[in-house]
Image (cartoon, rainbow over all chains, first blue to last red; front, side):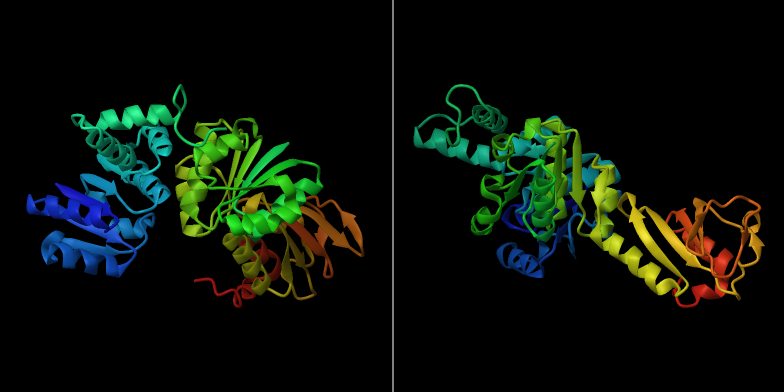
Length: 164
Length: 228
């Protein structure tokens, strides 16, 4: 499988290393060269097949990373909106079959999931796992954390967030 | 009209001032709390400190009753997401986005944000006009720079002088709107004879105005334009 990953932070580089080790062709895009250097320090030089320096919503950068032949695109930069926009470009402009975006904001993650972009909200998953662990409860599936916590944030009794 | 402006840079600041002075209800959202506090003296309750991409902030400022949202932050991704959220989650009738990098404009359109303003493109088209020829100049740009009104001054040596309007070969989308002769406005017809000293006013797309200039002033007027 050919995969383009946008964002070479801890998640992006680790994901690249996992896929590369399984024989997939991965290219990682980041605007910052030092992100690649740090990834090499953490994971070794073989963490990805190729690296491309550039802006993730720039079509020529994405082309350079091989998005036209990609089977999957995953955006995991630190910016929610960058991830959302890049994922939409991959889907609508380049018709990549599998597109995923990591989105920290649960509400935005849900809004774009409803609009057909597969988003993964690591905020709700992380908080949910810690919540269950601290109370000594068994862990659940990731999607259950996303659904549970997001629905609490968007209204209803016991709404999260600052009270009006 | 209730307008929500996101981003209190120079564009957002002056836009908000103008809208308020015209009697509109405006909320200006600014991410940087210190900057928002500075602007409270100018705008009072119209300025809100917060991230305009956050749904809760959008709810708090009454996005659901807004007639228009204008996203003018310095980040194109943010402007795009603000407009999409306003459209999809709050059904705001109009969303207008500033495009900082003109390369991104097609992406906005592809992703459903059709009303975009690129100051780079507008200023570029102005410069392109001004350096194009001493004998023609841009009167104004309309429709966010997609349409221009051009004024062409004919001199005795111009190919367009002593020629009937019907013999001026225009290409594409370009309409001769008026002729100014001795400070009077003439409505051009096909048989109107153009004269040296006339100013020809035309409405055109930015591309097709070049053919107009060629027809009225001759192809040599292109020399200074640096067209490839």
